[in-house]
Length: 460
Length: 106
Image (cartoon, rainbow over all chains, first blue to last red; front, side):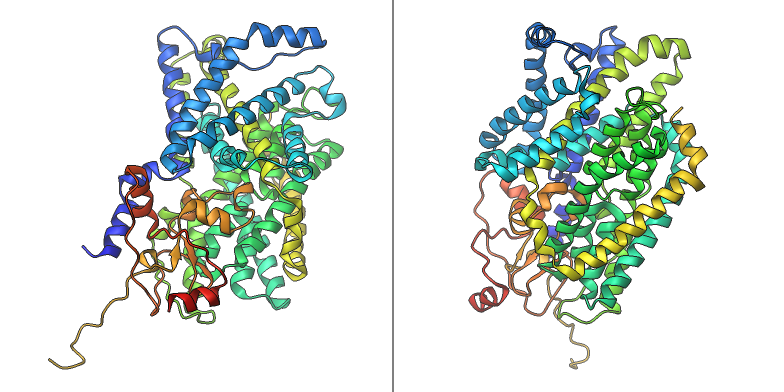
């Protein structure tokens, strides 16, 4: 076997299952799900360790909660540090740096979580996702972080783990029911956004490979799409960072802007989640916005619907409607770049395998988790599901998911350098921003007009 | 045997070239912002990496006439062996500009 063949074989072999964070997100998410199911079958529950703060009014109540549950919070830290530590060690990240960094992230996340449970938190817009993000941004941009903290800032890993756990709280029947609509809406917006950015980029005289990288970043899955398409088309080294800077800039802006706009328009949670899923640029950023909006339900006048609906609609739209198609985008653009665009002295060899190689594998875990819990739910009556399965099996997994998301939201802030936004340059900024305008407008029209009834029903 | 019948040598792909760096941590260092809402360890990145010769970010399956066989890696245990096999050659030396790197490699 030649060295190239050997590399290819090992890349596609079983080792890949332990070398990509997508797979580790599956192992961790499904592992926690399996443990929860085993405990549930034995008549116990994982809820003791999956502890979350409860509503509080006075500082005394807060301190009492902390003191009363100190052991549970310590054990929860041990659980997360253990499973995440195994994964990052296999990925080649130094555990001596990761563990103290994760302790810092866990400690701050705990404080943010408690702040979000203050009974007046909504009066001051202290939604945990937004607080985590804002606090991280302030620390990273106005303070100085020790280098070892970097090892713990695994935004994508936390969000993927959270999404796999989210699968356990999302009925598979809902995915089957809503999936086609999500794919239809997302496809319309993705094609329009990519076309706009690519066309504007070409008109402004940008390299086609840069225009394609920008277009995919805006249309498909943000930073992940930027990096995937940059590699597929053989972009210049500086193209991916330009696209990433713009994606991060607009994704951070949209975390605050979309929930604010949806709130002022009084959109139901399902509709707002669908809009955020269509018009946000990254999974992590979108989940922050969707979770923040879900928190408004029942707390902010005019916001109706189930709090979970925002996250559910977002996930269906973003993960099922947009993320899973990145391999096809990469394959098509790679073939076009090789056969139609200016030659670079490098030969491309894209094949159908590109679709699987770039497939966001964590989606498999998300679907499997949904299937498993749906199968368990089917064997119980509705009353039993509400009184037994939900509190003892689903709720603890939802709590763990919330923890994973807060780790992620805080990490987004800590890894975002505002000074990096100026690197992109004017022309890429104009092209991308035009795409943002099309994306947000089209996403709003489709979510609130064309498919409004559908997304509203999802929230009930 | 005629020249036409002589099989042309197939250039190995970029994944095994010494100019190609696809090691996730290294890619994250060299692409600012990647860790903010993305990752060098994700599936969508596949085996892509930075080519110091051409100054491009490429899929490991690309090929070019300037291919240079990769350097042997010192084993640092099962984990580093696995990473190296998956990612192709891992080079931790300073990259410099594409031009200076190309000159150095020549």
